[in-house]
Image 1 (spheres, helix red, strand yellow):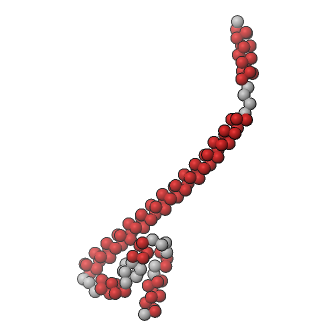
Image 2: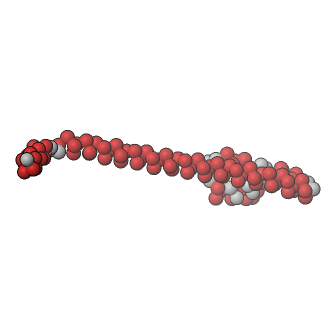
Length: 119
């Protein structure tokens, strides 16, 4: 029996991720237990292949959902970082705008001199 446990533990190890799919079919990624494995392998080939195909589809859907969640989380992290950097930039712009000197008088005198030259 100890050999069976170590064999079944060796298969799921590469799929360590803490998701439901890792725990659902721990034996070869297809069976819930060695007893179930023996039961399914004793079935007619058509029935066995149908069950295994359904399980593989289910596992693939779960993997896709996990990848989608990871992509969404990554996108949200990027958006938060962009927002933080944009907020920082806005603060810097606000500081620059407040400290910038206005040169309105220089423009008025230039306009005045142009009007005088045309008049």
